[in-house]
Length: 169
Image (tube, rainbow, N blue to C red; front, side, top):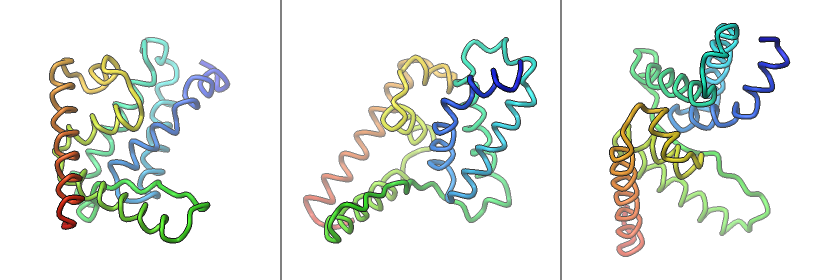
């Protein structure tokens, strides 16, 4: 496969790879490094890329596995799961502060979710993947994906209701 063909195939979903890495790793730099490493690995598999029926799913799986490996490594002892790609400069200061508080609350809630639920919630509700794609990416049965997504959403919903009802977090 030539470089131009490779770029046509991979570049449309490279931002999804980055967002997945950003979801799983603490810093923008870590996410960028992970994304770059996945793209390099894909390029090294360039000649055999035709055998993968869904290159995007393969790349997302690589990204997930790489990030989880980094989280488990000794070097990553200070990493935690976060999500902080929210910015909107047109808001008033008060609304901006409220939005930042909401993002921090969601980060805190999502940190408490089991690993699989975090990933499924990211893929389905943020990346907008279909259930079949998530099943393929995570090598899970549809029932297991739906149950994990349901549990993750329920946990998030209950935590948000508790916070908004009692004002404590």
